[in-house]
Image (cartoon, rainbow over all chains, first blue to last red; front, side, top):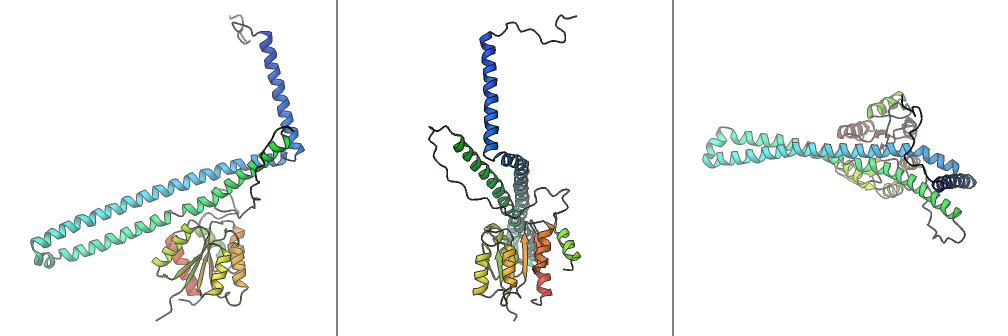
Length: 221
Length: 129
């Protein structure tokens, strides 16, 4: 059985008395700083605000996740639509070359055998598909509005935290320290809720248009 | 020949105004003007003739609810249908919009079919189409 079983292994070299004293000193200083920070926050009435920030940070995290998800979806949607449109465009280009060759070879036969009319019909169909692709690409740009509203909320939170931290810094600075006053950001005015970043399990919000329609129908609209 | 309907699109994001404008054009409603908030919208409504308003809610200066309220208490404007197109998805906001006289409510993100359907439904209901 090992001699030191159940205990920490004995280090090869014991720390010097000075080293231990230095560590104790650092520990005391950290404790004093923590107490000072706590007292300052409480004295300045900021303790409650700090708790509020802590509460809002997870919300900010989910908002940033929402932005990443929406921009990713928009990029994916645009690339898919571009792929489909390019496919149709390639088809039109190939058909144009083919009908051109047929007309050059025998213009009468090209018309009489229906090649020209078939070409016109095919181009019309392909153009309609491309138009749908272009509309979808346009619709994908709605992420700008939705993420813009969410970003504004996160920026407001950051600005509020910065303002309060600067205020704390100024109020707790040593008397001989010269601090340039930072202009306070504009007062944060809580806006409307904006996009629902996570509507799962929230009975107070709707998550799609059919829920809106059902709600309005239940009200007689 | 029937007169072409004139739309006013109100949204603080220019991207969304362009999207709505293009969708309306694709649906056959090419005559449209834009406003970036409720204040500008109200000025345009009072200085020109519009048949239909498509409005966001969350905007600076004057939001969509305030704009809706101003339109509905103005004898010269209250007949104009207002379709709210917004990211505000709280049920109480939808109910409030309906109570204030909104003609319809669309939550973003939406599809071309949804916008077209709501606009046509409102135009038919109000006798504009």
